[in-house]
Amino acid sequence: MEKYDYKVCAAGRVNIIGEHVDYCGGKVFPAALGFKNTVFVRPNGTNKINLSWTTLDKKVSLDIGKLDEYRDLDYGNYQAGSLLMWQRAGHKIVGCDMLQDCTVPFGSGLSSSAAIEVSTIAAMCAITDTKIDPVAIALEAQRAEREYVGVNCGIMDQYASACGKAKHAMLLDCATLDCEYVPIDTGDCSLVIIDCKKPHNLVESKYNERRGETETALFALQKVTGIKNLAELDAAALEKHKSLLTPAVYNRTKHVVDECARVKAAETAMKECDMVKLGELLNASHASLKDLYEVTGAELDALAAAAQSHPACLGSRMTGGGFGGCTVSIVKTAGLADFKKHVLAEYKRTTGYDAAYYQTDIGDGITVEKL
Image (cartoon, rainbow, N blue to C red; front, side):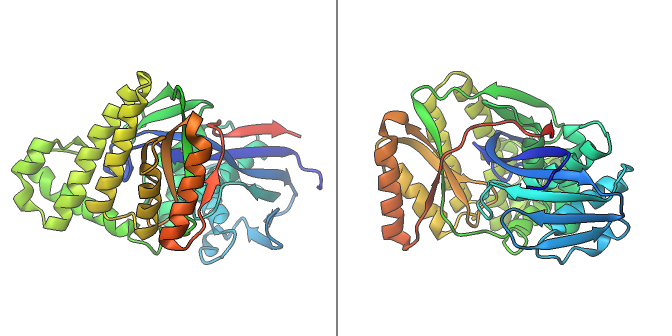
């Protein structure tokens, strides 16, 4: 490999619980993964940002004065958008060569896009001697996803990618960005990630539609409750004012209210190492995402059902935006081998597809290494 000055990484993430509540101002419970996007970077003394990939026979050159013009690129648009937002925030952008190496499975719901956005900005910080501020980087990366790529996402993915801590989950309040790091102690159990291998595209899916439905609910309910975020709503207030909502919007709102309660219960379960309770919460979360929020789909439902049917599994649910991607399961470590065999076979029998079983650790967010 050619000589570069820095190796900069940012993580993919798994969300243990708290799905589709980040953009509603709720608390979420993600963890950064050992899967990374790594950027090898060096300044080149020009006004061009030259992108290449270890996994693609492709090269893209971005003009630092025209970063707004690359939205339609198949490859390089996430990098262009991230650097544009960083530039607009008043930070220095210089010409450079960036070699990108991504081990986060694409389309898996494990936030490869956030890892790309965060690591690209952090790489620019490294070569411009700009202090790495993980929260500031996460916020500009989120802006890139929303304003440049077109996914109206919350802050969870970018925050987890930037701010993760090895062997810890993050109890993140998405309204305030207050974050508590909670040690992941699963006792005699393991966290297992399985990919249904139906790639999702959140730009084309109903993700933005769901976001719009929660905004409709907030607009209707804050007139009578005074809430600032939908996650502040409690079950009693929802039932009292349900007549203000259409049946579909009521269902979306009920999911948000119930999921926020599950996150609180999951915090207690994790701190007490009560994996049976945490597993029950995962199962309830998946059912809510399937029946009330309607973001799972046949493949994720089949994968979760296959996992839940195995005696070593305490709970399983979809993780991420939905419409494809992964499940996260809590499984008795002693039964892992049989669990894997059972789930992959049952999923294949039910859907005809081959799922992928991922083994990774809980890692750090942004890391910078001088080469």
